[in-house]
Amino acid sequence: MRIRYKKWARPELEASKFYEDEPEKWKGKWKEHFENSDLPFMLELGCGKGTFISKLAAQNLDTNYLAIDLIDAMLGLAKRNIETSYKEANLEPKNVLITRFDIERINLILDKEDKVQRIYINFCNPWPRGKHRKKRLTHTRQLEKYKEFLVEGGEIYFKTDDDELFESSLHYFNETGFEIVSKTYDLHSEPIFEKNIETEHEKMFSEQGIKIKALIAKLR
Image 1 (tube, helix red, strand yellow):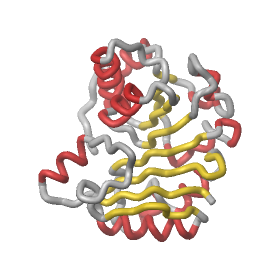
Image 2: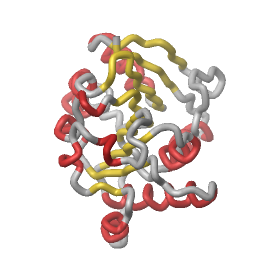
Image 3: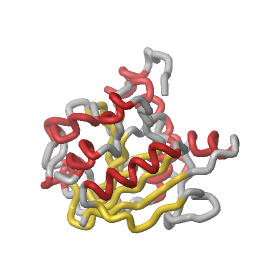
């Protein structure tokens, strides 16, 4: 998604207690970054405006979350959405962090010592052109990278509106040793998640009559 430059985003991020500007320094020790280091640790890749992670983290205080995106303007909006969600619940955002990084190089900031239990990938860029498909967040090249920091039995929750991306992703997961434990071609009619948090894109596509595809993959 393209978004206009927001001059306030960088200063607000740098002043935020839950924004990390140097994620490389925390490779292998992200749990130490949280107030309670004993909680399960999960990621959202490509968090965008943060509508998903802001609700997920505020509703699950028994889990620590790291949300990653590459665009300052997106992260600035995510920061504000997180603050709003926690304020509405009379809470402080102590179990969530956001950071700016290129997900294609994610192994520079995470490794097996981080013990990630789950990854959320919501409505990522489908990169439909053949030569660009390796950029997909569910491509085999990326999945192999995630395996380096996911725990055994770790999960990936994936949602998309794109039919071709979904079908290709089923192949990618199987090819890299993940087990598809649940899938649906119409998430809103056939829920597969214990509790589905509707994202901004999800709402938009659903209103257009586009069915939401989703899966849960587990690292064997």
